[in-house]
Structure formats: C-alpha cells, structure tokens
Length: 362
Length: 79
Figure 1 (tube, rainbow over the protein chains, first blue to last red):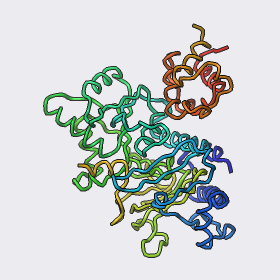
Figure 2 (figure 1 turned 60 degrees about the vertical axis):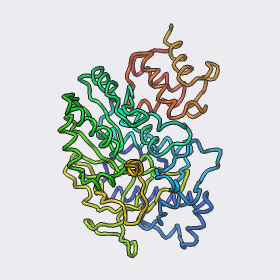
Figure 3 (figure 1 turned 90 degrees about the vertical axis):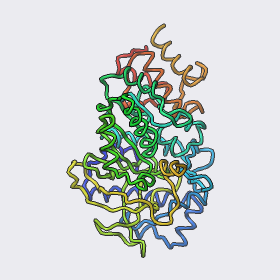
Figure 4 (figure 1 turned 120 degrees about the vertical axis):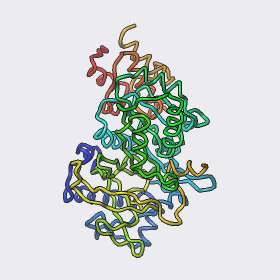
C-alpha cells in the first residue's frame, strides 16, 4: 500500500467504516514491515505472542509506550538511510526520545501536515510570525521537537519572522514593521502554547497599558505543545482565546495535539473547539486497569496510531496523556472522523511537550 | 539575466552549491538541500521571479528538473 495513494484522500473525508478498513490494511502492513526490519520490535512482538494473520482490526495491533523510544534505539532502516533524527522535548535531566527518519518517512510527514493544515488555512501561504526564537534551530540534522514543529509549519508561511529574541523577549520594533509591511494581508502566527501566553500575550498586555496596540484581527494562530503550565495558572483554553482576542483582536485560533513520535499526523482543533483525527491517523482511548477500549465519553489513556512511520516502529503508541473521545463523524464543523479532547498528563507521568518542558523554568 | 540564469542562481546561492551539481539533483540529494535549505530555495525562487508558490507546489518541487515544471505554472518560462 503506497502512502502517496492514501494521501490523495482529503483529510476528513472518510466515515468510520471506510476509515477503519484503510487504517487496518495499512497498519497491519506496517506492523509486518517493522517486524521484519527492526529486531527489538520483533522481539517484543514475539514475546507478546503476536500473530500477524490473526489481526483483522487495527484496534488489536500491539502498542508501544512512547517512553520506549527513550530507552531504546528503535529503527527499521539502515543507519545510512537516516536523513534526520528528531528528539522529543524533555526537561533537563530527562532522557529524550530519538526518532529516526529516512527520506520517505520525512517526506510523508511534511506532506501529511500540509494536507491537514491547509484544510484549515487554505493552500495560499501567508506572511508568518513565529512566536519563538530563531536559536531553536541550531543543528539542521538533529531537531528538537520544538524546532521540528516550527520547520514543519514554515511551509505555510512566507517572509518567516521570529519575533522573540535569544532571551525570549518580544522584539516590538520587528513586530511593528512586519505588521506595517503586510498590512491588509492575512497573517499566520505559529508558536507553542506557553510561549504564546508568556512572551507574546503578556507583553502585548503590558504594551497595551502603555497605549501601544497591535491589530491582529486578520491573523490565524496555530499553537500546540501542552497546557500543563497554563492549567496550573488557571488559564483555560477558552480564556486563552478570549484574552488574546481582547488584547489584539486575534480570533482565528487553533490548538493542536501531536507528538514528535508521530510527526505529521497532528490533531487540529476545529471551530467548535474539538481536536480532530484525520484519515491518516486515529486516536483510541483505553482503560488504565486492563487497556480495554473506553466507551465514547469515557476518559482513558490515549493511544495514537499513524499510517506514516516506515523508518521506525512508531505506528501504534500508547501516550502518557488522558483524553476522551467526544464523538465520531458528527462534529458540527462538518469534518468526519473522531473528535476528542485531551484532559492532560496522566498522574506521575514525566513532563513533556514543547510548551510544558519549557514552562518548567517559570 | 535570463530566467534560466536566475533559476540556477537561486539554487546555487540558497543551497550553497556549484552550478555543475545541479543537473539531476534531487531533494535530499546533497546535505544542504534538506528541509531548511528547501525553504531558503523557495524564498530565493519567489524573490527572483516575484511569485508566491503554493504549499502543494513547494512539496512538488522535488528536483532541479521538477522545479522548472512547477515554475511554468506561475508563468515563468525557463527554456
């Protein structure tokens, strides 16, 4: 099954039965693929007693805990074929995951991201403000999850401008000149949730107090990377949006959920505030007691499956997040697929997420 | 400068490679043409021809040859 054929389908076009068939076919194929090419993966499947011929639904494919990529080098291609290694976010002292990408997997990640995001933003590119510092992309071959996120989203922007300096302070003059230069155009803003709040929103608030106002009412903001710190400061997603709109008029705001272990397959928040699964990936919630599948509306541990990973066995992973499936194929926004929300990290799980690991310092 | 010369210059300056390497060159074919280099190349092409390339075409532009095809969609003739 060629992933490029899967990509020809638009991201929210398939209803549950068709999507299930597609996911099952591709994910079983990927499981066999990694079983043949990745020795440690094969060892785990053998120990689990996995029988490839007994599986007729992707719900039955074994899942690896995401933390395993920290403890083991898991790779299904030769080292020479690896063109890019991505690393998870982690606070200092934490081990980081290493995700090995070959050319095909890296290309498919970028193409998938493009299909998903343009469904929300349109195919035309927009002048782009990155709410981060350019120093996150220092090493071109070894990306942090933060750098990989920024680079991946850069494809939707033109005249990419980093508005924070090396000290994470807003460069107000740069912001001002950027907005004058692109007056009347739709601006694309990208950043990680906590950075947007701490270094952008708060600074705009401070400037507003001095009588300096910025109009971003024609902009679209995509942000992700975790809510942990903001929840601890009692800033809800609704308040986050409301306060941003109040300070600069920005109202087209989309959170996303995703992780470096399944780069490309992100879950975008729609106009109704729901995170959506595209046809390229899916979310399953499981009960912590026995890992059985939760009912709709019942909170559980989030498992993510992605049709992309060929160069490392990351197509079926158990996260350390708790979430709840809210519905399937019937979101008022019109997009098909499951929609869900993330409640937060499981208790005692380590801190990760581009936004959260950074926020630990505050 | 002809369009072809501009096209070649966009590659050689943004990817920091020699014009002799361009024939048959593909994305990820040299270390400089990685995802970072690709966006620099796109910016250089857009500036050289005063165009804005769509997201799908950025992804399509996977080789030196393919780029000519992509640019023709934007009215840039290279032959």
